[in-house]
Image (tube, rainbow, N blue to C red; front, side, top):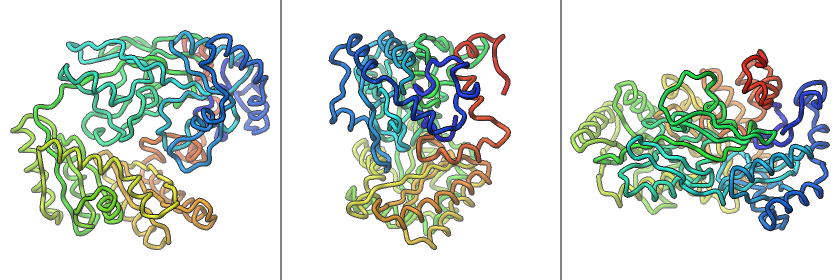
Length: 495
């Protein structure tokens, strides 16, 4: 994607025939062209949208302000209006109107993203999917379900509770499943159950010209041409608007056990993680919190764990299997200096532990009154994880910033949470420099600038470094945004 273009701004290019692109490309890199697209006939667009969905289009300041920000530290940038569709067909008509008038479109789930995905730097129309929140179908025998994009993960699991099934992807926030699909979300359970990429079976998508496609069927495998489902999982709003999601489900484990173990140094904790994964122990969650993060978590959540690098773990399976897994990991922890291995099967204690983990960002924020969090998101191959974290810790030791480390280390993903005074330019500059070094360190180790948060405003500048100069991002986006190229094999453009 063009480096100036936020992934959410599909409407900047929506529906435009190739001859309308400057220089025959989706964009020539000109910020001015983007601004001219955003300065479309907004009054005409609003009139047409009002005729379509009536009072479910709003230009109220409070509504626009709510939809012009997410959980990131970036300052809000507001859309011109917000639409609340109730069906795939309404989404398609909204997209057609915006395409005709070259108006940006920003799909919106629950606003829990961390990279300014939902902000509207060029204005446009925000499509809020919250009123499309029905569970359409549950196939218990096939272990799958189909939902509208506004259904949240907690809502789905509450709906499934009496079926003996659950949906395991848990990014922490009660995000919408459409948004989780669009950002390829993962979270604490990904080490066992995978990310949204592995758990989305099929999608219904409204293309940039308003056409509706279904990317696949419910079958668990297919060799019928292009894997369009995988194309849209993680596309972050750039290729279309997701209006239905078919998901893989799992049986609720017979037994679940959680554990906490502290280490005298972070190297021992990370090496334990690596050995656990390499030993093939089917652990469900394995989270790292450094001593700074543990201090914050203790204070915020009322815990009293040692202020040391710590692992939070969880095991799923049969009672005998869970006991065996816990004993094996306990032995590994001992080999790398881990202290008292505390584990529990009590639901209340487990919930308290994982709620504290999910509240880690708020715990960081509470370390400094009036400050905001800038979360980083690198991911590296598991064999390079210890090296990457140790080098990052050395970098932080030379810094004046508070930046706890927390991560889904079972799949090589960890975060720094810079706790910043946004009115202090020196702090922002230092955080930017530390983040640059962290990302380039991860890339040099075969990793990525973002393991799960996605590429919003905060990570645009790293795209070229990650994907390499040999790949023309703009040409790739042009190909992807042309439905004829996607759907007709004879017209695929080689890039």
